[in-house]
Image 1 (tube, rainbow over the protein chains, first blue to last red):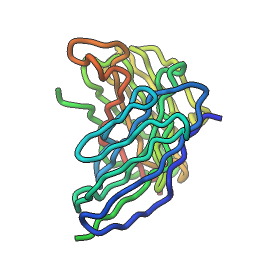
Image 2 (tube, rainbow over the protein chains, first blue to last red):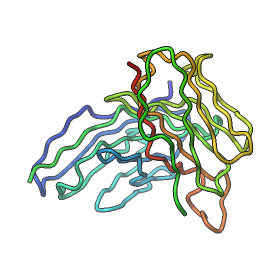
Image 3 (spheres, rainbow over the protein chains, first blue to last red):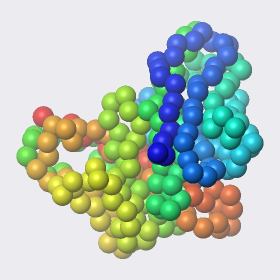
Image 4 (tube, rainbow over the protein chains, first blue to last red):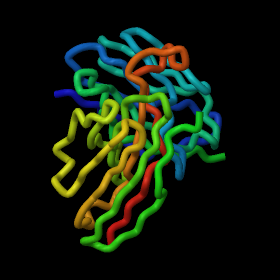
Length: 113
Length: 121
């Protein structure tokens, strides 16, 4: 099938720790891949994206590389801050269905000072 | 650019009542999407519009749910005879379907509103 699977949370880290949130996808081709972030009480915001295989998306110190060999798009950050505490969602679109997004279940990150 | 707005932000209703939510997309976006998000889960697609035409509906959208986008701008989502299982966050998103000067690379990206949290008692 076509789906997105994320590492389960919650994840609790100390400030300045290294972050990895795993995401794998299934697809018949190579769709764009996205990471969205949802801060407490807010809507989803696009964090970063990659539009083709081997692309690296980056924003606000976060990075994710589109790896077709492992069908993965893991999110990483070298040094997290308390302000990064949020829920992170991996997602992919279905272009033949108007670009609707299929999301992973989300990973809650809590960063302690 | 004021972003996607949704109204109300919160709605508490009794089981069996009807509720209606509104979404105002980014003005030049011709695609509009509705999603539902329950606690601890990712958003699930409900339906989408291209201009005023509703082109795709999820099986999640039972016959108690109806969505409209009469002039291709704002959209409404109505739930009739609400049930406790309808309690969720309802998210609206919009996107352009083609590149433009304003969005040369971000077409097909979806911009989300803050959501309407529905609680059915």
